[in-house]
Length: 117
Image (tube, rainbow, N blue to C red; front, side, top):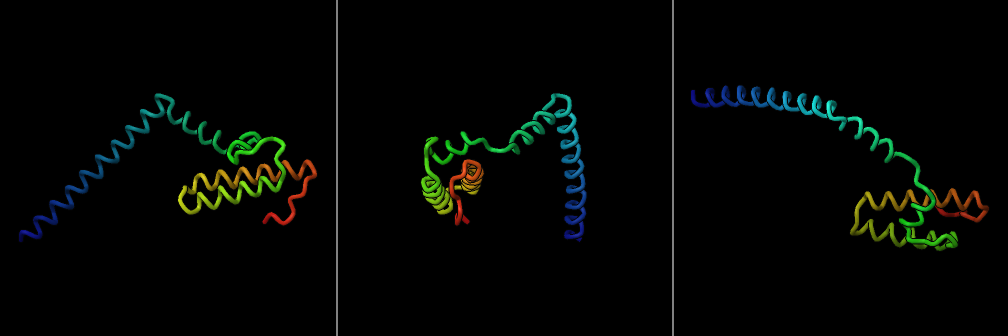
């Protein structure tokens, strides 16, 4: 009998809690739309999706403008491995994107990037 009572209380309590969470979520969305936070968030997402510039790529890898492709690869390998062992996936992905960006630049300039995998 006590188990049935506890089970009923748990079911009713979780239903009430679920409705309260849903109401709070709806209210938060409503407030975000009123204050423009939702639009700002969308703009930030779009901005984050833009292509990396050559300057940003060089900053991430710590390279000067006259760096050779071999220097780019050396920096990339060092930083990528270091962040793979004790860093973050986010930094590792930024390093990879920087290498991709510079690879495009070096290919346009006619410098060799063959065998870079």
